[in-house]
Image (cartoon, rainbow, N blue to C red; front, side, top):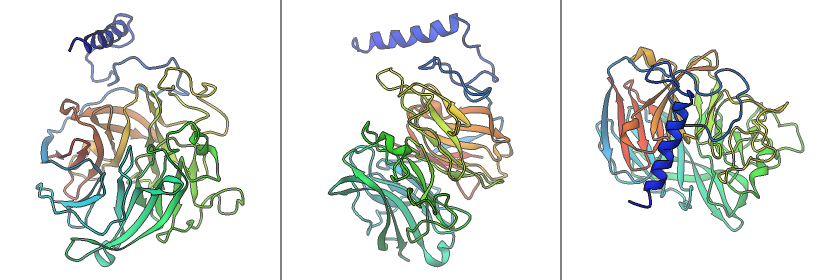
Length: 403
């Protein structure tokens, strides 16, 4: 206890200094929800790009812990009947009912490498799941050259006990020995193709690959359900680029979501020490990592040249400093809680909360932190068929938030 006391005192001193210097106001719903001092003195590119006004949900929300004992859950998707298909990091899929009943592990999946940040990651089902029972998922795969993000598909058996005909359809090369920054989210877009996210593999050696069009790392990738480059991709006719690349310049994207009205693609990604980003994804665009960032190295020094804006590179719609570590996210489309309509909800790992963002005209206009008292690392959040939100945590809990 005595060893931790100086750290605690130091943290309190930082907060007290910020308040005494007039940096933050007190106890108003319009104050930013972030009260800690930023890691850097970097200036945003435009007003409202960070620390926007706080908002509070007025509807009475009931919070329930449905399950307490999952093993490092990572991804979730909703089955047609409302049950949840959930991945666990070690390589297991399970079906969980909205009343909290957990199935036995589903067998038949390829082996994953669960070390570090790897394992069985994001998943989604085919839009025609009721007919073909097809599931798509992302996982970390070990090879002779190292580790990489792989995409597989398979059929959920009629008895729901196994995945049949599991096939790896895509590998994000090049592989590397690192066990970090796999990205790992996957969705089916409106054209019926797969969108997947990758990381730049968390190494100073591989970091520049986020800018390389010859590498699949640090990208949003768009492929067919058979793993081929999708028609209409921005680099299909570029002989010096991988044709499956949709966007580039990403550090580690662990989420994807479609806006329920516009259909726009949104992601959020991890910065280093600060500089977590919310991005509106547009085909062919460069999102800047590691050339521009609002974060700094974990050592405290600047990243590269220490610049935050550069011509030809996209600015984040919003960023966080200090980091919140944004993981899986979902837009809310139900009418059950009207004030949440079209709001974005993000699972926050280091921030230990479910984040609500109010977005108007592609700008963040309000921010709220939910379940912050639970002290859980929220890995993913998704809207259920019943108009409630379901959130999983690294500690093994499944929460329901709703009326």
